[in-house]
Image (cartoon, rainbow, N blue to C red):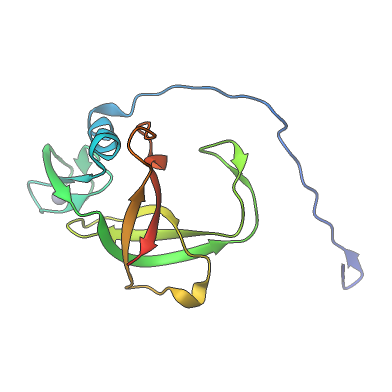
Length: 159
Ligand SMILES: [Zn+2]
């Protein structure tokens, strides 16, 4: 390909098969959030005592209020599609270390009962078949297959 006499080429650099194993704590609230997904296939939110904002995933402090939160509240497995992207250019998925097959959908979702957004995969790759405001629901891995990670949510699907 040329552009005004300048040749363009795209060099692909692979990291090879290097392993980078690590372990980290999900923390008190992150553990509660992930445990509810793993054990019950449900979402948990955390509510700010000052402004009432419900966050999913959980966090310890409400940013705008700078108030510590401790009240856990149930949040629906269904919500609204806020925006999305269809990824067509493959890259190494940092959560698995492997290339994810393209195309795949990636979405920003507002669960019913939450005031914040959750970002995850959506099981649709045709942009003409989804739009902001569409209803979606979580699809979880089968019980016994869940490991306590965000990937216990397989994806969201249009309702
Ligand atoms: Zn607040």
